[in-house]
Length: 557
Image (tube, rainbow, N blue to C red; front, side, top):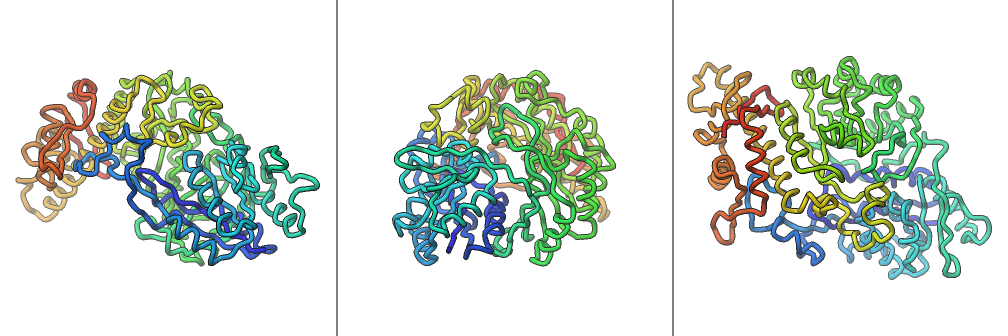
């Protein structure tokens, strides 16, 4: 039986190119390769084509403008990331599979997954289509309502897919006993299965099914990697299906690391939901990584409550250079409403982290239910004074979350295209699109200033080391010194003249502008001017620290 496993394209204002590695499909391929002729088609990574601005996003047109140039930009164009419909059709025609399995991990991109299933049936109506992933787990009926979808797998898919392949090979289309985790349609009725949880999670993914050189972080070949599955917590904004926390065997992890190195992998991003929940287990994993010369990251975030300085030192020795932490918000009342607690361990370690060799990115959410814009400003003010990068996430309706059920309930389909950060959807009525956009712009401004401070610090250090006087270098961020933000108006960073004027208008006039390349003039961007002024009033007298250096600047404007 010939099986094609597909990662579908997505359409959005942005895609994170270093987060598209199709690890889930490689686990499935490893499970069925002994009984099927299986191949993997990543139809998302490596291609991008600009599309017309979609009608369902017309309210976003003032915010995302192609002609707008600014150093604080968000998004400007709408794209299709991945293969076109014609390219998908040709891949299926050339491969001539009897089964097409499609990843439907995100509700907001479920229409693109359905598109692949529809094309498969148009190529050959006898092709069996199977969809799996988080969206398939949460909303199997939504997929089965389409005649071109034959089966839906709920939960972890390795065992259900293998059993389904065996039954299909024997000519049994589930007419006898159902398979746990496999949902289907019979005589107009949906037979919805429960969610499958794998008993054995030490199967090694088959990375030979995709070209290793296609996936890179900073020009280094990378892969996703799992040492555990599941999460024991239930944050109200998270929509992942309930899956218990389980750890892999160390012997299997060691064997998989060897396979990765043999494939020329140079960097690993751990995709565990709770990578370091079990501190002892994580320490053993770090011991396996020592001496492998791999660059390590965990973009899903490090759980701060089990982290201490000895563990961080072990992480650095193993290959971690950049750390991602989730703060959500600095106010305990907001965190409590989201079933979270203040990460006190992280806050206590911040002074050490700021003097450490790590680069730290701290993530927080804008627009949570119960949150107010002033709460976000408080978070910005706190983080801008630390040597770290700000990582904002605009709150969106995560299917399956408490917030999702409270706001849209069962009538969620009209919101499919709004279940993404780029939609700036006002799930909290205090966060209009204009206010959310303003807050995102302020984050961009802070990170821009951190970059300017770093560049100035590095420049100053080089001149100092060479014995040259530092005159003529911006006073912002001389290593270890504290300059003033207003100095950027006297000696701005080496940027385009348009950018310098946009920065000047923000610092002096407290308004966001951009340069319209069509009209060849500066124009105001949509923003809440009162919120911008409030930010600078609260920030006055505080410090902005660099991201990579110890440089800093006082806010005096």
